[in-house]
Length: 141
Ligand code: CDP
Ligand code: MG
Image 1 (cartoon, rainbow, N blue to C red):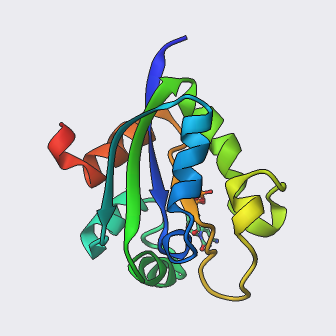
Image 2: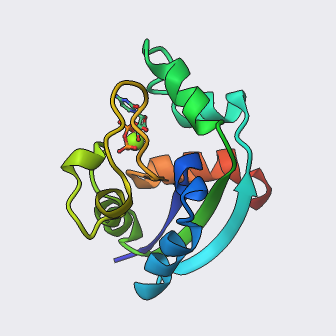
């Protein structure tokens, strides 16, 4: 079992609702290591790179607006199998389908049409994590 890094974003809705500390506390409770952390205002270019697989979707402009609607907190954390552990902690994309106890299940909800506002992002693979860390923390390269 090898150490991995993951990239977590507390999205603008999560920051506005006061969940920065909640997300950090969940990482600390699991004894994961916080390697880097900062408040960021996303640029269109960073978002297009981060969501490169969604950038050509009709609904992408709504996602870009949502992700720029306020500051986010970007976190790099590490630990053994942290990527799957944090994805489980995050819950599925749709907060309505996320179990209580997950971040999205505890603090997310459905908001009707428009982008799915779901409190946090977390990387889904080692390759995604390393790609995403380079976008939000170029200084760590
Ligand atoms: O964040 P996650 O990996 O669970 O989902 P994704 O499929 O990679 O999509 C990234 C983000 O785009 C989601 O977390 C939503 O905020 C947004 N999204 C959306 O608003 N509507 C969709 N149909 C798909 C994604
Ligand atoms: Mg994803």
